[in-house]
Length: 290
Image 1: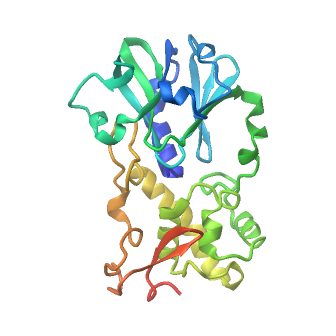
Image 2: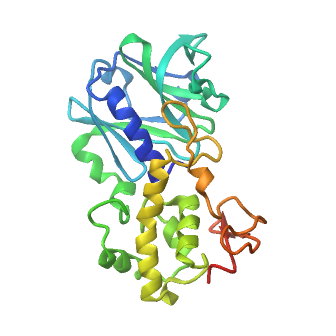
């Protein structure tokens, strides 16, 4: 699932391509029209609207329009946005060139598209059909329940050690479980939680109440460091995630533990292990992480 680094990478690439551009057409694939992907959306209400700005709240992508409305896209597990030249052929949106990275087979599950001038499109590819799109009044964004319940943003000005410890200490659960919760810390997800815990030398099953001040300081420090490193690398691609130009995120090459079960730890050579926490595969070094 795209996390904060993937969402911010998407925004960075899309902003110069779609901001201040007018939407000339909407395309939704036939099957999607009968599903829940497009919620409260009347396609014609988007035609001739200009995208004023792109932002995000956690993993929600916000396309602010020139009529005080906002198109919200939640990519979920397998969704990702692409920008390039497409044409409609046999009721499908397909790239106009075979040489583009957008032609990667992973990008072929186009469910939704916004057309701009010169056959440029912003499209959503989603193999599992779990992404959600809705159009609401901009002033109502903070009334959306999942947004109202969001936790602390590690890349915001509210990221202070006091706020961090205050929200953590409300929960006496495994630290990995806490880092996965969007209601506690937003944007880490499974991959970055494992990487943060490894750098902090903390076992993922440790209860929050057992963490001392030094360990809490390590977590506080490494969470934004890991996220910013991933952003610089364009995010992490393990399966379906692609950047808007169709390329893979390269942070996968920097992972210390995630996805490396039975491989040697890069620091101590101890064999890395894996367990399930909240149904998610969790990777760690038993020797380094206590």
